[in-house]
Picture 1: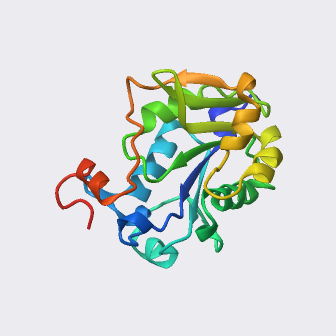
Picture 2: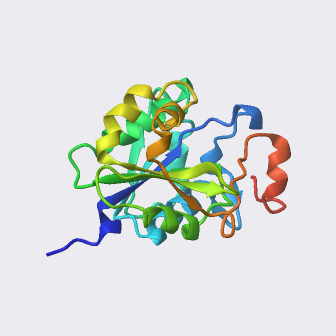
Length: 205
């Protein structure tokens, strides 16, 4: 029996950020179009075709567990979330060990302009455990990023601070397949109070 390639890829949502520049409001709990950012992003990964979705939690983890509707998702606690995105990426990849996942499609909770269409495009670049791909916006690399399982040890070793997979991807730039997504997604981040203007009125409470 041949397995659907998409089902071999796990969605990995990094949702641990504490929103320091947002007054300490965990980004996962911000609202957009009637749903929490963590709910929207997890659903986008699922709708794109990921076989499973792991969500890495940190700031406000207990509140996220209590308030967010994340059916079928595996919730991964990252007690070292304050160290930066790298620690969440390591925790997420570690949570996939021992599963049948052969790839991870990594998304960020604070990019609500990226939906299932962009996730699906990058997911379609999966060809096996050596796959390495990323969304591109006008030719510039962004998220989501697809990491075949063969790359996980190297990514985890290089993921420090807020760099995430950036250093590893820089070293392996010649191997990355860029998938243009600028026509279906907007890769802005919700980092500061000014960025909240990108969410509907009243949606950040």
